[in-house]
Amino acid sequence: MKWNRKFLTALLTGALAATPAFAVTGQTAGQDMRNAGHETKNAAKDAGNGAATGTRHAYHKTKRGTKHAYNSTKYHTKRAGHRTRNAVQGAQDGAQNPQ
Image 1 (cartoon, rainbow, N blue to C red):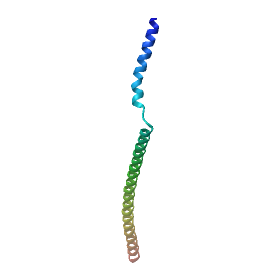
Image 2 (image 1 turned 180 degrees about the horizontal axis):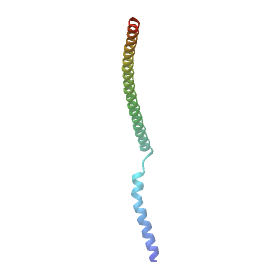
Image 3 (image 1 turned 60 degrees about the vertical axis):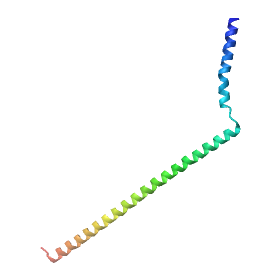
């Protein structure tokens, strides 16, 4: 008899403890759809922000690479011109003053 009473008390206590959990999580289908819509909207915003960040990053890297290529070409073109001029002058000096 004592065992039956303890079992019955435990069963009722468990049922009463679980009742509020069912009441809180019991959403309607309409609320589920609204939640899904909000989650989809937030996911689209996150994807858009990621794409914008990637685009800005690529733009700045391309701009930096273009400037670097321009400056490097300018420097090496000027250097090649100086070396050519010096080589021509050295050849002319050698032709004028043979030793």
